[in-house]
Amino acid sequence: RLEGVEQAPPDPILGVSEAFKADTSDLKLNLGVGAYRTEELKPYVLNVVKKAERKMIDAGENKEYLPIDGLASFNKATVNLLLGFDHAAVKEGCVATVQSLSGTGSLRVGAQFIQKCIPGKTVYLSNPTWGNHRGIFSSAGVKWEYYRYFDPETVGLDFEGLMEDIKNAPDASIIVLHGCAHNPTGVDPTKEQWKQIADLCVDKNHLPFFDVAYQGFASGSLDEDAYAPRYFVDRGIEIMVAQSYSKNLGLYGERVGALNFILSSSSAAKKVLSQLKQIARAIYSNPPVHGARIVSEVVGNDDMFGEWKQEMEYMAGRIKGVRQELQDHLERINPDKDWSFITKQIGMFSFTGLTPQQVENMTNKHHIYMTKDGRISLAGLSSSKAEYLAKAIDDSVRN
Ligand code: LMR
Image (cartoon, rainbow, N blue to C red; front, side, top):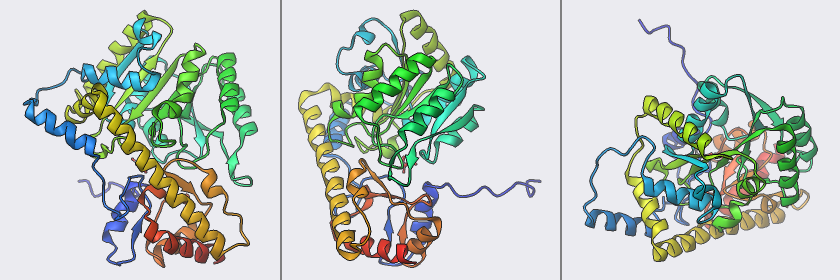
């Protein structure tokens, strides 16, 4: 009966991990998915997470259902991390927050809200953007278009193109912005450029939807990486924000994140929250409890909070280190080409500019797994593999 079902293609990011697993070569290296690895290329559970879990077990935490909108202490912690502790918007009741299933689930609840409560709007996504954004909005029945973002000539931001496209979007459109460490390019607007984007959002009455997946993971500082959404809020702009704790607290498989609306009135926040709860209930009922308790424990305890910041800084530092090493190796192996873009980009990824054919060469010949758009996750690279990667990139760009 279901023989007529069409075969769906592998996922552009998680499909790469499936292919990696099937490769039996000792040389293989998975730079596809953005997941942090140790220098030994092993997954890393933060010490502070283990500490929080031990505390939770000792306290005899139960496994009861959470409320639809999640764990109250988590929701409080997540807004504090986003806006800074004790922000006026929270005190005035202007924030609606639901704990959701990491970045993807939070974006999806947001997308469903757009479809249901402000229908007919177009969502604008950066070109390029994270491989899952299009699918999330399409699945919720929301129309999306691209705005220009990346200029391959300068390997930097196409700021004029971005401004022109956001200006030409119909008034009151939804603009998806990456809070920091743009995925996949690693290219962020400067503070002056954020100001101009905010000005334009005010003029056009746009609703920015921030995807904050790397807070603390880009610069090592939670405050610095929250600059853009905080700036928009301080300008009085209403925003939506999806947050993920996959990277900064290494809680990938726990699926912990949040969707926040920072609004200009408490009555709007109340109504929005009621809708978010109705949406979440119909998709997954209520969110998972374990990861939310970890976040709430870590943020709520001064010692653990301090320890988390140190571990985050360490992870961000290790990525910066291998970024530099990769560039150094490439500059030595192939000095005719400009490789400075590697350390200009920030965050977890490097957008190498490798073509799909060159990516195929990386994988088929060198067993290096990466996404077809030429993105590599530096979080999956070790010092000891940096030269191997540089040689493979050099070989691929020569072919
Ligand atoms: C990535 O971009 O690699 C991560 O955000 C993981 C994912 O879910 O795609």
